[in-house]
Length: 166
Length: 100
Image 1 (tube, one colour):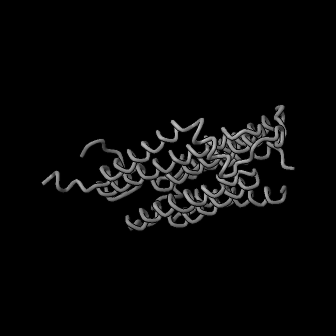
Image 2: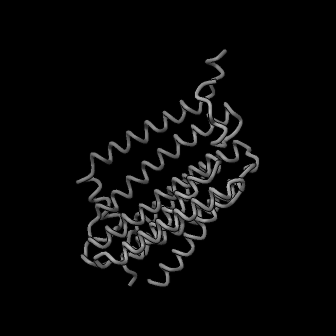
Image 3: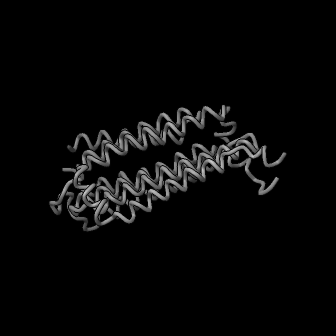
């Protein structure tokens, strides 16, 4: 289990760095798919089976297909001035490395419980479904309304405004 | 057995990378992808804590984060399309006018 975690962590970090450093948005999106698959693997090592599956279906499937569609629809040229801000890159990188260093020290020195502190129900589809449709059923229905509003809203926002102007 | 802090450090690293990209990149689509990276890093922390404490509330939270991320993806990409239709660019530095 430990070796799987370290391989997946390396994969996630390398591909996430790829997302922010590739010049072509298509390449960024490809790296992002690898990141999502790595996160799905991390969920699997934490015995969250349902979330690992949903991560692949929703993120690596639906959301990334949507992103790919938009990139190809817009017919983008390469980002013209990715490298102009070396100063920004350096300041941002220093800040982010400092953030990781400080939080790592915090996590390593604080009294965290071990990973198998309390045995409980693992995240199988049956267990998640039982909680989702009893304790969180109101939030679940509200999420449905949110998705509905998002679909209608995205159609309204992306619709051509030519008809209104003429 | 990997410790809980390893998962949290991975989560913090992924969040930092997402933040870095969000600050540095000019392409609105890549900025959007960096937001997704940050959401994923938080999901890792949620699932790790849920595993440690042996209850499913954290995993339910991740499920709702995914739902909101899907809604955000639809709306965000629609905004990018509307932006491109108006200024023929998705560079955030080109979107400087409130009304035109």
